[in-house]
Length: 309
Length: 135
Image (cartoon, rainbow over all chains, first blue to last red; front, side):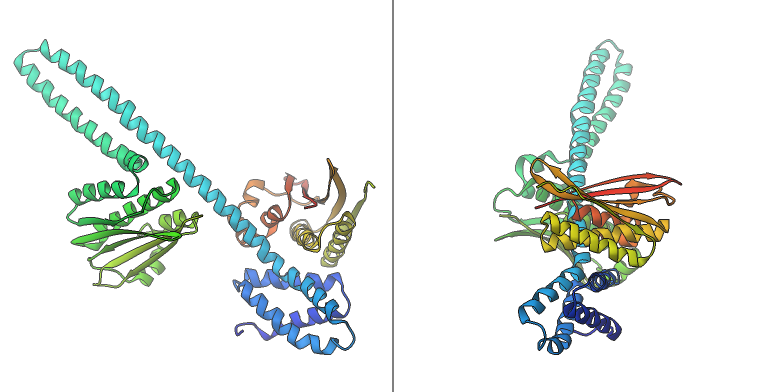
């Protein structure tokens, strides 16, 4: 494999030769440090595998006359394990980080549910009581006073409507009650009404998905459609959901102005278009995000989440 | 048979890291740890000793055999009188350093061992205790 500096190959081969001839801790330490260096330099675990393989080819012929093959294989494995250990550490830490991310997402959703409930039920309930009290009060007023009070009651009505809308956006109960497609449908209708983009929703999940998957897709579609409305100058957008054997696929397409994907990624570090949040939510589910676009050609955002079992 | 070894290696230079790895690996073999577990232990000792050399200049690594309802294990204790870790919680988080971001250093130690305790007093030093039970 190309890309491995000669000096590193030389050092690994030396350490391997040293250990195969006479097992010693120093050689193992060298192998460990080379693995560590390869990891911190950004070269992958495949780099180490190639390094090890090449070293075996170089070293074994010179030793096979004196040392039994089985012993050589065992010793070579010990060196290989040392060089892989930093990658094992990194891998374990990565798994732990994913678990933490997932728990954090759950907590955020729980909090969103609580806030949505407080807005909808508690604040909404207080508004309703206030309205009733005002209605009673208006009976005692002169026609002029009644007129002014009804203006206030209309404003309260608008406030109630906005609270409901907000509660829905924070945590759509329709998502919990009816599932992803109805929730996306509702979302698309609301967003179409508020913007000039005609948004359609097609496809099926073929039954309910795990709650965390539904929430993730809902949030990401919400963010993607917000991007379309804000930046794309699109006339139409389509959300397409498709169930595969062991995965769910969801895409958001628009016919807008498009953008240069690499330029946007480089300049804004994906932050400006909200892709970081999308990626983080997908990462915790081992999902992938693919964005394709070019200036003048619209854009497509494709999400793919594997389903367990 | 009850194993009750206690041993330590002074860590002053990089050569001592190799001595500590060797000692840890040997003691783990006595307890009956598998070769892979022994290699994990060597990695842990390397990361802890590396921190001693880098941040405190000198210190020591101690080994204790531990036992708990039929299980046997090993405790690796890295101790120094260096400047201490200003924020232990941060040190265990991924973003703390390049090594930490890759899951090496203390964060890496945590993943390879069954438990990790850190006591650090600014200006007085740091004691890291990592335990691993036989699987």
